[in-house]
Each structure stands twice: as C-alpha cells, then as structure tokens.
Amino acid sequence: MNQIERIEHMGKILEQTNEVAAELFDALEKYAKLREKYRELIAYYNSDLWTKDFDSQMAGDLPDDLNRITLNEDTIYDLIVGNRILTVRMLELATDNVKNS
Image 1 (cartoon, helix red, strand yellow):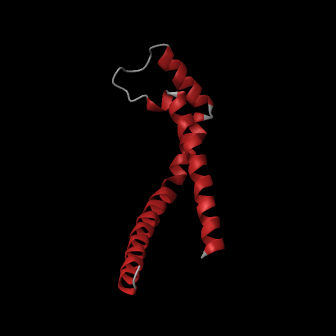
Image 2 (spheres, one colour):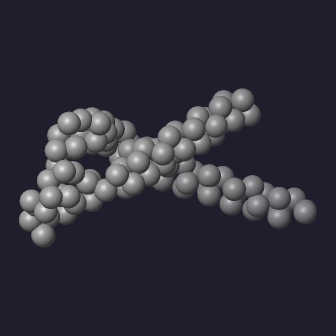
C-alpha cells in the first residue's frame, strides 16, 4: 500500500469508527433509559402477580384480544439470557478497549 492509499484507508477507518461509536453511544443511552422498566418487568416475572396472571390465562379468564407476550415464560427468559450475553459482550469489549487503546 502506498502513502496515498494508506492515508485514505486510515481515513475510512477513522470515519467508520466515529460513525459506529456514535451509533453505539446512542443505543447505550436508550438501553440505559430502559433499565428501570426492565427491572420492573423482571420483578413482575418473579412475582406472585405473574403467576396469578399466567393462571388466569391458562383458565381462559383473559380477553382474547389481550397482548399476552409477558405470559410466555420463554419470551421473558430469552430476554434475561440475551441481556446477560449482551452485558458480558459489553464487558469484553470495554476491557479490550481499555487494555488496547
């Protein structure tokens, strides 16, 4: 790679990194703002209220047009697992960033 190609190549890397970092920062801000609501959902899922609501669903006591996504055990469990995987990935990237920047 000659000098001109190298400078252009590095400029593209800089621009891409700045763009993606800005997108990530925005996504992390949105994620941070949702944390309290996420905690509320997990508290509900671990409560007697969720069990009561689930039992009502199983008994057919809920309206047919009700959005029951939170009464599906797998959906919330998958969210919890996905959140943990995401958190570990963020820690890995943060650690690498601190060590290698």
